[in-house]
Length: 84
Image 1: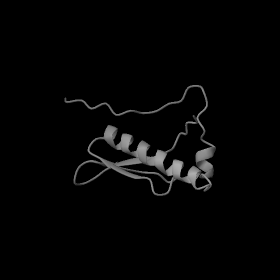
Image 2: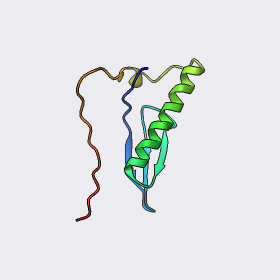
Image 3: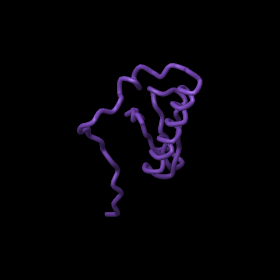
Image 4: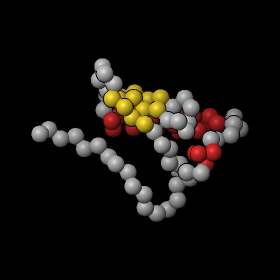
């Protein structure tokens, strides 16, 4: 099983919740109530888009294939909600 690192942008929505999009994978749009939920939905949408490309022999974006995750360390920022 291959694993890809896909850059996404998450922004808060005025009406509440969050929206995730990606410039790498066209059509990746996910909305959730929390950042964690939005990330989970975005991951599922991205997987379905990539699986569809593979199934229909469509090329994957160059940015995606060059981001093939390799063993080793990488850095990620995670949200930690706190009530202060």
